[in-house]
Image (cartoon, rainbow over the protein chains, first blue to last red):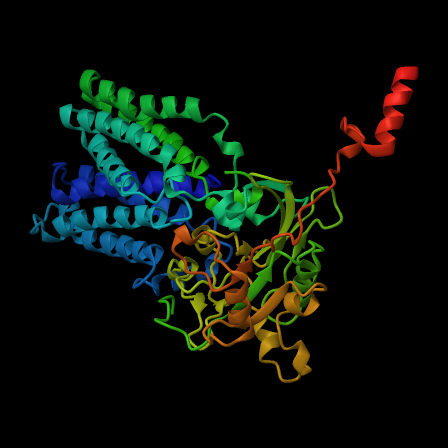
Length: 290
Length: 246
């Protein structure tokens, strides 16, 4: 699949943003006054920036509001609703923290739970697609949810907990790659089943249907992005797991959080690039590619 | 809207005969020609006369070679277009309700006025049946020529999809699969029509007919001039005598 920058920015920023908003909502980051203003502002900023980026790849963004209509069937629509509900639910809590009103934390806790519902919906947009076997697996929602939680913990402050979460995120990435690399074969789609000609013998592409490029080749059969997969996996693991964990454990707190957070963002961007670039769509079979 | 109908009155679809298709691409151009006018945004081309041309098509003809365990390889031309699946994943993923399956005849369509061009339906389709139009920014797909098949201003013989109407070898057939006595149902049953990638769980309506078995074995090897074949009879005697003289 084409690793479009808009969807990478969307999933990485909104994941970390909702993770941090959840920390604030649960009251795990003891902030008040202007510290709360900037803390909540950072959470809202990341989440909203991600959501806005997701509209950049639309062919007709002026009709984007219609995407709220099909929540009964569409994960994309559900994600839209969940995101808006979350941001609205958390608003009173943000106000209370900023102005030190000491309101009841019910809205905050509910909003924090909704943060993870939102990220879960985002992950299901991808995990529901059977035609991309690598995505169509429970490991995808687990990775998205854990990445959001880790992003939130990393921003929430240094210590053993966010360091352990970062290490576990790296382990989940490795597990995801191990599972993902075998998914296409496990699903069993081949050029033989795609054409139905496998019953006769072994099928090979004799000639392509067109000499120029097309939407399918650009969007679904985008193989160029896989060139540096091995290297990107290593960079992702270092930036998501090792660097944040080391920073959060050994650097002074004021330095630890920005270093860990920036490294986490860079690592997640590399991991999400691979999440798209390495995802093989079964339509590639018709073109003799994966 | 994007909920699938539990069942449809008709199941309109195509039979594609891989035995008779000669790979002429007439269906591709007829489809492009018809869908350039009238229904929805025209299928656009980008840089059509330049170095890197590209365009939107609803039908593509692939060519495959199939090597059986014994005997010679076969070339098979393979038209690929929307299969109007009963359990169409492209419909349920749509966030806006633009993508829908009609309860009356099972045709899967896109309401272009509600399409935001997010591309998710094209991801959900295992068959590459949907292409985003780069000019209009909306998703295009086979409509089964919904603006022909019910169009009473056309002569009756033209009320079928453009690809079917144009096919010079009669490799494409259009009809109702919900009716077991329809031409397409009987043809598919008689010839062992099959669905593509059943493991994807989409329950396609369209059927493909496999190439027929050859009615006689191929006797002469096409490679005969290159092989060391021992002649017999008079030619064999001549071969031996001339060989000794040399």
